[in-house]
Image (cartoon, rainbow, N blue to C red):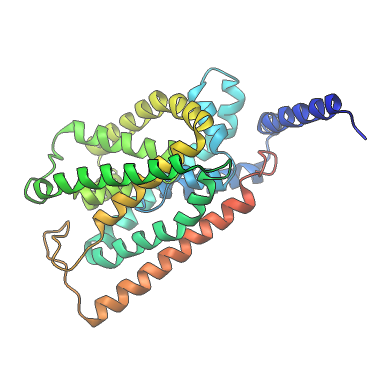
Length: 318
């Protein structure tokens, strides 16, 4: 039987080994591992722009979320070795954003209502897993209160602004709007469960953003990239510390934000859609919306089942 001191030392050694797994794996180039990380990056990139899906949640599923936060928040630490590991993920992420934007932009023009219900379903499917993750280190009444308060405040703010947004167009001809969009994408990479696409739908510019990025419109793509990079560097270290120090509180705060922003985008009958049409439902649209929501819920649930199985995947397994 090991003594407590030896057991503690063994645990520290194991943790140190896990932290260095990716660094050791990059010493020898493996094309299959490189390709696998590229594919992971593509999926995470798509998560940045699909409403109801979070890039950070996908990064957690694939087992490199905390490492990514640490890398971006402490850029000079083991820079070369970490860059070698994250390079294919970064390339894949960029490709995923471009490809995903092109597909989503086209579909959003012709099927806005079913797509929004699909995204709402994604959130419903993800939420049980996110709630479980929020309480994995314990849950108190104050944490639930944080979720309720953030839901009420976010919902009230969005409702207060909604009337104005329905009559005033977001000035997408101004560059600051695209910097802001890039910053939102960066937050999707930092905060598990935070969905950039959901907020873009609320702002009424989701389709325009997808068209601009998907078609590589440089006056849009360049400020979006700059906004994303700047925001990522500014907030990664802060959120890394906040989530480590106030894990339950931060996650419950995010849950409230997600639920509020999701409820607001639901295309109720009579709601003005992004293209200016009025949402209306006949029997076929009702059935299509239900099927879309169920498919989205299945996808969201599958994502969190994957996270449960693979969150502890080491970099060596990647």
